[in-house]
Image: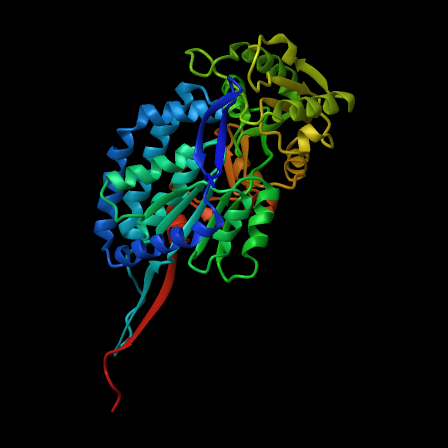
Length: 465
């Protein structure tokens, strides 16, 4: 019997790009056993050795950069220039995590007590299963894989079925860097076999990035085990533009924050609230800046919106826009005004002004190049609407007043609050969320600590009497 394969479709050509073999149920034990064998070897490594390996991983990955960038574009449609930028961003993020590893994971000594030595060790969890998403396939995976290795773990990467080669790139680069055999493995699996991996007693931590429904499935799969599960499940991220904002700067960033990567970002701006005195000017300038967007072959220079990764996404987005207009919104940037290729999973940009707060466009995650804009009377109404969401990943305020930003940021239910910035992950800060966005954190020292286990060392050095 032949091995079942995963067929990967190029979302621009709508033809098969390649096939990869799918892991079968009977092979799960072997994958986990190999990971645990590598773990036994890696557990004895020093922090300096872990850092050295991850430092060697970087040039190994850089040697594949052009190939990896092209693979991203072929697999999920990201314009090639943006894919190259993602490779660079991933390397920068890895370097930061490497730079903080020794200080973060070093033994922590508590205040001295006569006759005792007391400290906290940060030991590896074991085997980490990373179920990574397709929209930023390198940036999402690096949040877990490199910190897992730094913390002394083995890693199994089950990348999205849309971007399987990205998982392979991590495994290849670590192997080329001299990692113990199978320390980082890439597997391709359907939902049923992925569930078997989650439930395997040899897996010690599960990290998942994806949809809320997918997060619920992962959580259910792990429910019978005492295993930690990290979930990053997306957002409906709001921006609030105040009357005192630098308007041109705010518009430019709110446009880019909504439409970069065709809006396929969990931390993209998906709804904008504008203080009444500058609302009309904001909308007018927003419309003007949409002229810069061009759809087309993502391999071509000058194309800044490629096809969406999912065949069904354009129809979903069209329904959201239609719903917003029917509810009273005004379609001020019409998708019909953009030239689209004759093939590919394209959705042209759409901007709806006066989009009612209750409509789908302002409530349900879009994950595409559409946006709703709504006038607000001031801070109180803005906070009310920003918190009126099932999600809480990021939120941004655009203002010249730092005290105002802090005051509002303390009221907004979100994992990250930005002032005059958006759609960005700072690796020095924990990446986390509230409500249906999930639980746990990646990046920063907290992401590293989350991939380790505390052990209290309580040592009596002087015997009484």
